[in-house]
Amino acid sequence: MHGKLFLVPTPIGNLDDMTFRAVKVLKEVSLILCEDTRTSGKLMKHFEIGTQLKSFHQHNEHNLVSEMAKQMKLGQSFALISDAGTPGISDPGFLLVRECIANNIEIESLPGATALIPALVNSGLPCDRFVFEGFLPHKKGRQKRVQALLEETKTIVFYESPYRVIKTFNLLKEHFGGERRASFSREITKLHEETFRGTIDEIIAHLEAKQAIKGEFVLVVEGKN
Image (cartoon, rainbow, N blue to C red):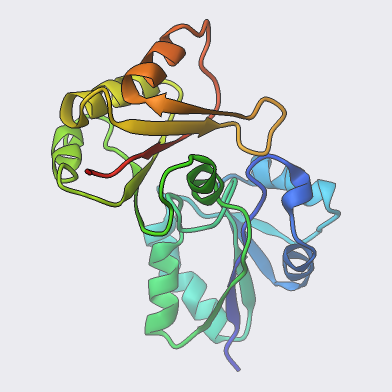
């Protein structure tokens, strides 16, 4: 009998967003693969989940996928979680999923929290069709990635850190113009959640007026008209 891989979303802020099914699965599997055992350990303690944790992140996943697949083929069921949100969405997961598919191991992906969808539907921009770009490269390739979107007519979604968000909006202004409509959401589901909508120029002015910029950002940008 083959085991199974469960892809289990975890809350992006508010712990009440953890589903009953996610807790049940995490209690029943043989092992939980997670980015940071310290971060996930706090979540497990909160929900009284005693399953063993194993580090599985971008620096070791290439070396672990074959061994994890081998153990699942022997009958063990594993869960994969990220520090926050849905595994595989700008987080580790793709390589393990691919390895499981190659080995005919069943995969079950639970629905749950991810930051991009709340930010998109809250932006006021068209959300029937959109493209998700995730994080832009920190240095090399940033200009090229944005240039490739110059003719994109669908709404565009990015992830960005608080340390680069103004720099990224200035890059978008350079290529799309300051009058292009956009929004950002940060600290989604948390106490200081904020969504700000306006032109790119208005957003830059709003961010530059802040004394401190905190929280992970989701940027939503109007497509070309």
